[in-house]
Image 1: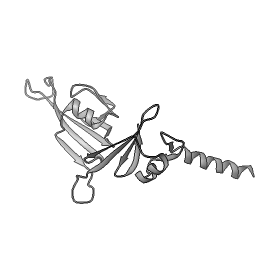
Image 2 (image 1 turned 90 degrees about the vertical axis):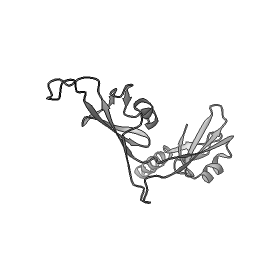
Image 3 (image 1 turned 135 degrees about the vertical axis):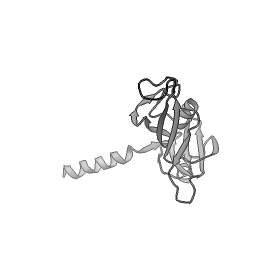
Image 4 (image 1 turned 30 degrees about the vertical axis):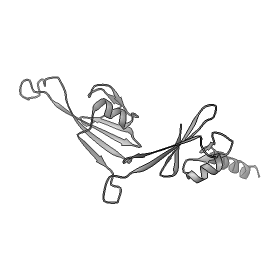
Length: 174
């Protein structure tokens, strides 16, 4: 008799761990809820901000970085400066893999400031410049470009809360 009760409690606890509480009341919402569901549960936000974003799927950026050190003992012409290949894989605009000369690294300063796994694509572009080549996942509509509507609902609570929607679906909260 006790075993079914424990199993029921475990399932209900795991379901609740993915739920968030509305910023201004105790109603529950979760990632994947629609704007209508969140508005019904939490009420209207104090402010709403809409913007558009470009392609946000998996990407791989390629860089070819000239190193300011002459090659020694490599058989290259005297005074030649090598070019090093760096590749960065992104998922959800965060670096998940950095490869320098076919070696995976957690961080590198080859393009100036140090970049790390977990850095955003914007911060890496700021530190390393525009990549030489960008490889994107095909979206299936004949083009790699896709526009996403981003809506931010801000609730003025004691600690301001912002709910972030992508194409009408709740994705994150700040």
